[in-house]
Length: 415
Image (tube, rainbow, N blue to C red):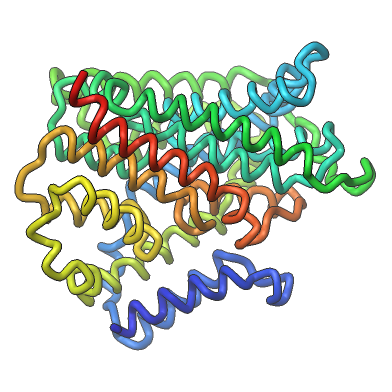
């Protein structure tokens, strides 16, 4: 075992037992400490560490956080909560609409955006249902992950696969291969979390955190920024092959999209302060830790003789799922793409589906899970614990993995 891999395992263990650590210890602090140790001990140099950070992802998250906070400040989260909780919907209807909504946002704006936008809504759902917020927040994580699977821009690893696969119609390809398992998984997740709602811990209304009220009356800057982001992301996905000029990175698109907020919102400085800087620090540190692990060759050593069998469906599923737990799914997909000898559509779609669903196992398996935790804590709400998350998400994980594997490997090729 390399020193870098050992530090990664320690980070995982510390995050998994965080409920027994001092309350001030946060996930971003644990990850940052690990990155600092690897830098100080020379496991990765400053220049390689800088290069290991995917600054495009950081830029995208900054823009998304800006837009999500601007939407919150103008009352969008409260309006969506009111719409979800309209009188005739009831708790079951509210849960279904919420999970469907965040899955759609995840498919269109990526899972990280859906996580940031959906967290305050999940907390509101918990307050109105009179339960602890852990179940709605975990339902949010599951819906965000599953929803992102069916879209070429649903998450960073899908974007990598689209870029490498040179699909002429990435939207159509992803929908054809992954729409059915995504919809079936969302339906199963809804039924599972509806059951979890009935068993959830009841709490008094006065124990809930009161979310900050909207502070801005100007709705149009936030909506304009959201519209620009949606249009640019979809345009890039649909027409990049035909129009090479659209090959602008998602980070640049996100920064362009958030400009109306900083140019026209009266609360621009407040929004800038509200950007989740701790989560951005977490991701920078995570990329440094992952870069050190990859530089050590730990993943390649673990693969061993499997490197010649990476096109086999079972190997694709096994490696992409379990490696994502140690190295995060984005760098795992990037390395996997470099190691593949042939890149047929079925292999790439299975890689996209399984690496995405790997996020529904541990808190740190998907960036969107970490965003939900960080956002909830920032809003003054105590989120779910590490093993509580895994316990409530494993049934969804098992079902979605089975459906995705069966559909991509056996059913769709016959159709």
